Image 1 (cartoon, rainbow over the protein chains, first blue to last red):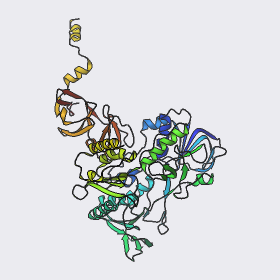
Image 2 (cartoon, each protein chain N blue to C red):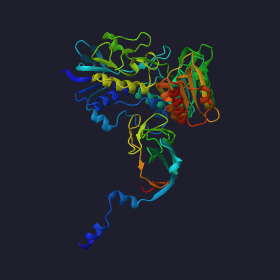
Image 3 (cartoon, each protein chain N blue to C red):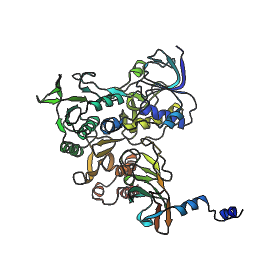
Image 4 (cartoon, each protein chain N blue to C red):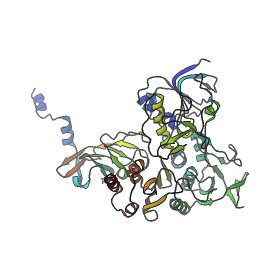
Amino acid sequence: MNPLDASIAIVGAGQAAARAAHALRSQGHAGSIAMVGAERHAPYERPPLSKAVLCDDVEPALDVLTAAQFRDCDLVFMPGVRARRLDAAQHALHLDDGRILRYGRCLLATGGRVRELQDLPQGMPRVHYLRSLDDARRLRGALAPGAHLAIVGGGFLGLEVAASALRRGMQATVVESSPALLGRFLPAEVSDWLTCTLRRAGARLALGRSVRAVRSDAEGVEIELDSHETVRADQVLAAIGLVPETGLARAAGLLLDEGNGGIVVDACGRTSDPDVFAAGDCASQFSVHLGRHVRIESWQNANAQAEAAAAGLLDRAPPSQAYPWFWTDQGPHNIQILGLAASDLDYVRRGDPDGGARAVWIGHRSGVPIHGIALNAGADLRALRPLFEERIAFDAEEFVAGTAPMRAWVKSAIASHVTRT
Amino acid sequence: MEMRSGAVRFRLPLQERLQASMNWIRIASAHDLDDDEVMGINVGGARVALYRSDGEFFATDNRCTHAEALMSDGYLEDGCIECPLHQARFDIRTGKALCAPATQDLRTYAVRRDGDEIFIADPAVA
């Protein structure tokens, strides 16, 4: 077959891939862009897969780019095609349809694949994993009112699906090996609030429990836990995390992060090969805010790294890094997070999670905010962001007692910081 | 000829003609909002967000085009409103969706200030 040529080849067709293509055009790249995606879909948003796609009567529109934006990207779009091999020396990608795609520069936006649980092999009847739109549609088809869904893994994804299942009139049981929900992301008080809230909503939570064995028959699935309890369910979802898709990079000899498994990139997304870049779930980048290399699986990170990589691909300076930001919609509640938890942080809270289900927590180190959590108060956390990004110490007592709107309080905190320094 | 001259005589600039034909509803006082503040108002069943930016007033639909969230709970800066749920951003002058996850623009409403009184064009008519 004829070789293909592209000035820039993007491997992957998810959030980071689409945002990078859009950013390349916005920044004036006039050369050709090829996009190779293993799935048969145009780039779509993944956050709704665990929520609206499972719950809404009509599947929502999921496109990352509008039809006009997609058209303006002027891509050579190859859905349903996988890149088998990256030949960095020859600037070529070998595709699984036998073609060779030559590139000037390449962006790996390969994302990740679900981590499989040995006892729950993919393809087994009644067993679900959730990463792709096709996965979500299959799961949606299996959600029946009155039936019981067991979820192994109490991370963001598992908990969101549990809330969706309850909304669909199902029973939901979550099995989580750690004793606290979302411990890496939430301080104990928020984690406890979430645990109580989910239980009140009807979810059964088996915390600090692991799966010992699984049996599946015509009647359903039986999950035996290490506590010798068993969970009988009609369907089971394994949501125990993501493995970064780094096969191409590894085989091409690109530097990988031993700790987090991601493809090591610099501030503009460049890998250890000068013409190969990476962005999104598969990339490990130094965070100026966290002070270490991190591989972050979030929607915001995919967008931000795509912007940075687009600048890098065009030899321009990347925009400054935003503070890591995450959100999750847990049933009716919206939780937003700035930064990550650390064991040495002191937490203070404004607001009442039980009374008004609205509160903001700040985890700080000697008054410098490091980790922020907003429960149904996203705009407040947004107002606080400058304190995190500029490392501005605040008065914890004032924060807790303050009654002024958050934005006004932040202004005064910045003003008194300026006066002190 | 007479008709034509008559038409010319009564011809107003497009903007003024539009404004004259609109149904204006008083919705707030100018001092209800400081700069970079936003408030939600129900106008005959329509949920409207009223913004104040650089001393000027603007109005859009209050509900985000992306998810069930209110712009009046959002964060207003540099003439852009950020949705409190997922940080979609919109230009408050044009309603234009500026970044993901929103792709659909917010509907805007004409705003008129008369002294301390703020009026918007009737959402049911506009």
